[in-house]
Length: 239
Ligand code: ADP
Ligand code: MG
View (cartoon, rainbow, N blue to C red):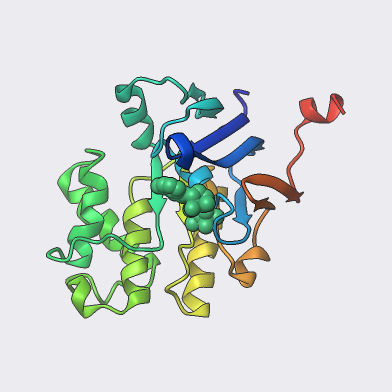
């Protein structure tokens, strides 16, 4: 459906070949409302990361349908996927920072990849974003000289700097202490409100669950619980 930034229908996914072939996602259908914070929970191995990477163009959709920002991902050509990825922000548990670049330079990479804005504006935007995540005083530090939580906040700043339309986050607060974890998610929520950014996040952090608009539970590759879903007028009328 066009009104949803993410719309998944009958998604199945398998890993491995032959004897080792194993189904990881079973007939998943879900619509994600614009500007919402959807949290995905479930035991380890339940398919959360697989679903996130399928929605985020990081893994090929082989069966069923994923519509992302109005584009069908199944069978999509690489240039389409590349253009779509530029509209996305990714935050992973492992921060994936460049060790040889400072906090400022790492976040700048998030803009250079997108080619957005001219130099002066970029510098200002990068400083502002790092300030927002509480690292205004660590601009020129290398990752080696930052704590785990600080590194993760740099990664978050990098993911958000270009103003993505959809953010995919996989346990982004795992390395953060309670307060900074809360701050980061508060920030993501504020972005959702201000810019209409849609966020899908995997987390077990109970304080973040409290902030979710919707909590989706996966078990053994199946959607088994869906709490707080924003029901659209059209789907309500079909019930
Ligand atoms: P979660 O993120 O909920 O812990 P995953 O999506 O990582 O779960 O994994 C779901 C299932 O798919 C698990 O059984 C896992 O072993 C399997 N799986 C995930 N990634 C791969 C892979 N690259 N190759 C083979 N099996 C995989
Ligand atoms: Mg995972």
